[in-house]
Image 1 (cartoon, rainbow, N blue to C red):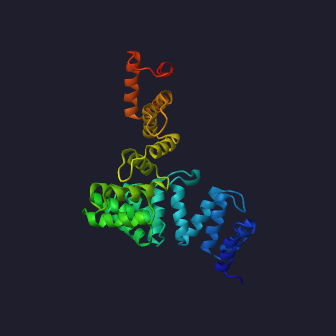
Image 2 (spheres, rainbow, N blue to C red):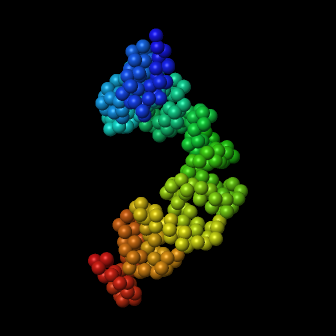
Length: 314
């Protein structure tokens, strides 16, 4: 008689090359009482791999496995009730399934359960409980949970403030590659809480920006613009601001407009600069709104003349 664990192992190997056979093997394992078999069937049904896509059918399989104490299935049910895959959202149900998964010892559920307790998603807020679960997640190697612990200890949420431990957590998270933590380390260097000054701050910020983290990219552009922690490089600043502006970042669009108007790091082009300022203002940049208004007033009094501004300001 085939061993269910071996069937599931073989099924997992065949997902990419023979998904129909993979589904059959998971089903055979499930018929022998394997929670992993039920879970594998549900995962394939979720994506329509090797069988027809059937979210409701997948949910039923997850429930069957969860009823037999299968923590990964409890975790998936938590995700579904959080609104994943277009499923109806029920915060209380999501919180319950994540709790059960976490308490069953499934590490991916630890930070989910912690976040639910921290923000009161479907349950009463419990910052101290959240901190305990984030610590368990961090101990299991989750670098984002390390960042969360750093934040909570630095703000005194769920425990007394502990700046030294917060910095240690931020550093561990940043070293593990979490961009939010890298940017936080940059801020700590600038404030003097962590040694290294502007140069260390620049290095942390650049590392975070290289991951595509938008706040870090904006900060890096500003550091190039001002020459903080590095030589001033207006061309690099303009390049980063332009990339962010193309992604709809209004404050970056403002800087693009300003640099075009003044010819900083790019050939001066007042018309394009004004167009950028108008887009920034439309996108919600308050400083752009103010500057566009100033230009309009100056245009009307003939103090300046920007080609095309008459049409753009109507």
